[in-house]
Image (cartoon, rainbow, N blue to C red):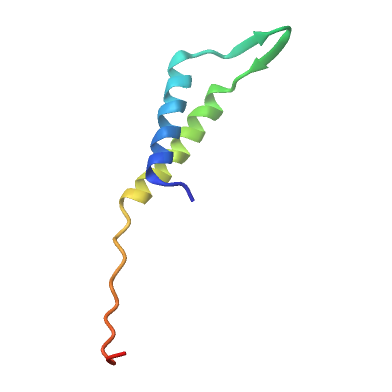
Length: 68
């Protein structure tokens, strides 16, 4: 499970990649193709995880009534 900070970092990184719109990169003759739709789906998945993380209710406290 990711922390809220990790999710926010991942979403920001994906937003940056998507906004740049680079679909392929060639370095030393090796080409890499990026699927922007897959990046968007991944970002949406992280956003859903982040939203559910933010909407969680805090844990309840337990009170021991038996004196021990």
